Amino acid sequence: MLPTPKTPAPATAPPPKTDVAPEEKPIEKVQTFYKQLSHAAVDLNAVSDELSKPIKVYEGALKKLNLGVAAWVDISRGGEDMEWWDRGVGYTRLKDGWGIALRTRSGNYNHPDDLVELWAFNDAPRWLRIEGVGKLPELLGALLNQAKETTKKLRAKVAQANELAEAIIAAADELAAPERK
Image (cartoon, rainbow, N blue to C red):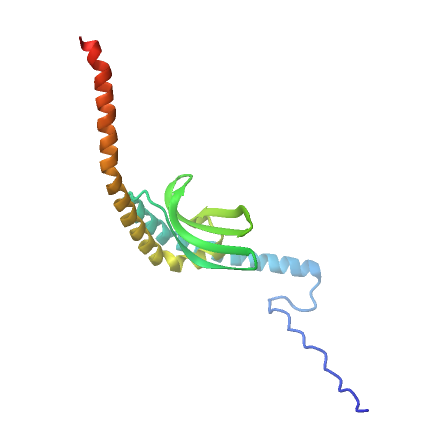
């Protein structure tokens, strides 16, 4: 019988590099990490504020158009078996008016109760803003298509609305006619 070769123990990944000496005690690590995190947070917030500025400009330009139509484009989507999820960026009516928004949705094809989370773009989680900003040009295209389609549908309904208005005026005139006598 041949001897079974010994498998070497799996190598573990080295710990992430930080500015903490390996011999530091937990209290010292906490203090060191917190101080580093404080500096990282300042930088993170400054860059996040910088991203919000062009988004406000983009959103302001769309608000000037007074579109009144919503459109969404997928950032990503997936799922397996009966579960699904997607993330999207859109222009929609939010609680404070029309604006650029980000959303996450997930659900099960067998159950109608989907989970939907919706944020104004600049209030969304940072990871979602990072994913969404590159889809803004596609959002303009989706809004253009939606505006054209809505215009077409409105034009088709104008004649019907005019007929209904004429009908109610005629009915009101008939009722008013005996009063005039």
